[in-house]
Image 1 (tube, rainbow, N blue to C red):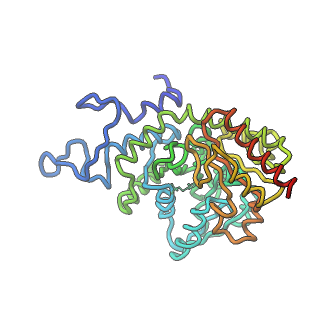
Image 2: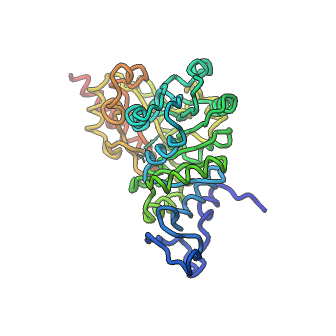
Image 3: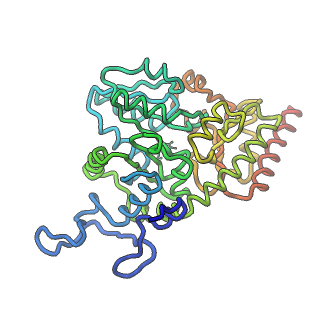
Length: 391
Ligand SMILES: *Cc1c(COP(=O)(O)O)cnc(C)c1O
């Protein structure tokens, strides 16, 4: 049998026409419970929607297929998916975490799971030596993001998975920034890939959701047990919306990337901009790794304005198409200020040591017309230059 391409799988996997009505799209099974034919005999194995629901199952099968996994599970948010994975651990276990993980992940680990005597070391994951130095007898998990937010640093996933196997750790990659279209961590031997489906998978900034894909049956069985026991499941309607988003994931990701590359190149040449962080630029320090490990470079760019916070404020005031907002991965372009928005909860010295200066701006490049987006950035940065000159 032919192995179908990503585009075909994203539209069909888990989503064959409804057996009874022939409905082409998976219905929204808005039900909490399921009739049983007789005692102990269900129709198709469904008993109660916290455990299983057909709309959710379709989404889970589709995500598993796109991540090249046997199994996937859907959750009510990215954070819920992340928390469910942490319950694989027991108190006194130790986790190595990359030092610039998503702020919500940092908060969950450092403020909540430490109460249950889990230990975390947030370290610079870029060198194997620093990871090895952080290993302890009780280290059970390694948690990374690649590329990171907002500095777009990469981690060599193959190295991480080899190290995890050598030291018997569970390896987890938060794959939200790349989506399964541009990166499949399980291909590199990683145990679990996790997503905020709120972002690219949903793709329209209209739901909060999460998912994970697991390589091994034993890990999946435990996580499925967590999913129904903890209960942070997505609604059937939200599952429907994510499934609907996924149908155009390939199309969208290609456009996000095409636009992002042009914008990154534009910003790199702009006199108001001192640095651009985008893994698709050949000037990115890990460009070679990006080409090897990812199938594309995504739609996230960070850049630094030479004149710092005053220039940032002017840019936000004058920009027309980009919306000032947190989040990412939707069809619309968003712009944000990591230092005061997504990363405001970090202590200042930590924030600065990660490179998140007051002049740093992050954009999630949408799929609007590229000429319009370039015009917008150009005109807003130009106003800035005039203001600086007058000032
Ligand atoms: C948004 C995000 C999360 C959290 O997901 P929610 O859906 O907001 O709970 C986790 N990791 C990354 C990289 C994210 O961007």
